[in-house]
Image 1: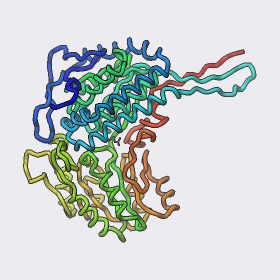
Image 2: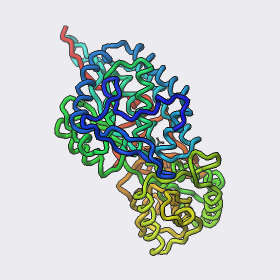
Image 3: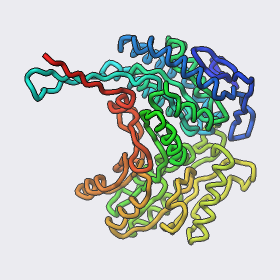
Image 4: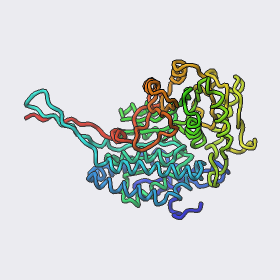
Length: 485
Ligand code: SIN
């Protein structure tokens, strides 16, 4: 791998400030999803290394939490600057292990770094409270304290940003962290470890346990009594297991789980703007994003126009090697991901969906993970893709007649992460925004992600918020001091 800073490519786990092999010496392979090339053999850690990392994080907590907030803030700020200084290398590593186009990968590195910048500032703004007491002989004071050692279990779809979004607020609050990155994309995480050390983060403050045995390491992280908080981004299915395990020691938990985002186009919407938003919200990361649109709903009066324009805009996108200029959509992450998209397509077609563009692997090559943007017209709520998180580049468009009908369909899911809609009637905009059962609602825009806003869901999409002034609260305990006079 050609990097300006070759040392950013690490293959061993990062524990107590050192890159270390697994105790057994075992490794697992990391491949480029575009051409299946072997990129690295990474330390395959288990229970013992995870417990060691937790112990080091606990020892480091005494030091890190003892620092002035301004000192933690300065180290985080330096970490942020280093990420931007090395944005090209970090993006290259990300594209190679995950597949997304290089410009999109650069966007992710900047997005990821923005959480570090944001929480470097927030570190200095952990305010307490005073509360008027009910009797004259008491004073009530509220202080906030770091929860302690935190665990972050992060996904492959954002190998950088989902780490910084969890770790930056934790570190800002004074917590220390053990990260378990996804087995498909551990290299981006390890590169962050290199830069954390360079930024002056003391040993043990940030630990990265690489593993191919997510179940074992996840179990240790969610049941170890020293770990006080677990933050997970991934599927609802796994989130439920982790939550159950975390209950054994009553840990604080944040879960950012699956989604089933509706994208509603009302009849008075600006259709061209809606198409722009649709492309942004559907095909980001080849459709492999929790907040990607899952179901498009277009009003009957504009249905044909919307489908026609969406088909044209989708067909114009270039699918290919993320490292090549001009690529809009990279490969999907692995064979199972493509198979699951193929299953959903097969089901939809058998129930009457019409393929307007795309519909099978690029060049019909059996061994490629490239899947072109696929637009399906005549979609209905009977199709599996109505209830399943597609996590791929399929845009299925349903038709609706009334606001009441579309809201009912949009909310007809156990998920509640992100929702999008386009319209111009202000009364309707407020009504719909308030009625959608989602943690995040995008109105006349297809992009909602920013460090300044609270990211998170309701219902089975999880709980807890990442980013914004709320994000740091997840890593703090409230303590009430009652002073008798
Ligand atoms: C996700 O897929 O969960 C993250 C998307 C984002 O932060 O924009």
